[in-house]
Image 1 (cartoon, rainbow, N blue to C red):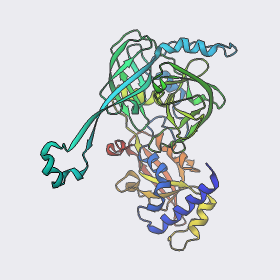
Image 2: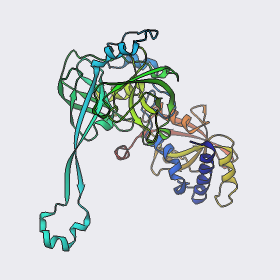
Image 3: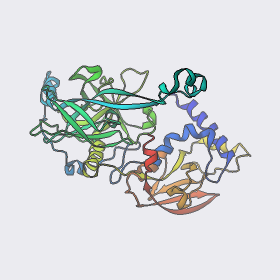
Image 4: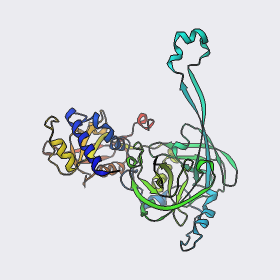
Length: 420
């Protein structure tokens, strides 16, 4: 991505939006650019430690309190030239293949409802057609009694799945819960004394650390690839999945279709992420959900079968000199930005927590919960670090004066989650 053209584009689009309306939306032409931030706050990360898009969320203490059981990865010295083989030998038995099938219903094109066709075929033309769609992914065992972690999109639309263990045994798995917002799901099989994996701490990752991916890409079971942690904190927008609330780990370990849901490991064989996204058209770029995030979400899915995400309901963008110049140079937009920093509210969704708190399009958030709002990610992180219903304190610049607002977060609307 080239930053300068993107910033000029963004400035131009926001300028057009501001000239449209100031009440609840600064809106349409800029919608595409703002959608990333919008969706971030439509359903932010879950309480306590937040989701992804801003910083790695889960504090290390939450790893210790997670119900996921630790197990088989012992420290392995990286000076051993065969340490990857040792890791794979240890953890391989806890990596599984997941086969999911779902029934997809499609409507027959309306043209076949034309009397001309009905005259020849009568009622023989069905109005809908159904077909079974098969999918394969990966997963890994997190408890000895058969709980398995995988991606939500691997089991999307399936109540039951087939789980094939490393030793060839096949089980019918029950989907305990899915969270499409973070792409995390938990499956349960009826088995005992299964091998499990040790969880690492994704909050402590540094670019350049070793990374090992294990999964079933393209139907090739137990495929191992290696590389390094290329970057941390990649936003959902950067990865091309703006509807997710994840701050991804980037790795150059090869991740292909079928790897989804498999573990990303460090040199000690500890799980540091769950492989998920592939950036289309790129080579050497794979992405994983930080394991701290996956643990936090899976704990809620196991306990209650669902996850509540804090929700505010705004589109926003960080103020830059280019953006300010574009807006202020257009006399028709009805607003002048005097701020050289902060986060500009581009749109406030009707009946959202932000609307009820009195937030308006054109407001500039300067501080949130006592912290300087330098970027949209800072605001996002503050939302994610709250529980549903908790209060956020905002310091806003509006028309050249300071306005203090108290905003209670809401629960991410179910209908919006289902669209992700």
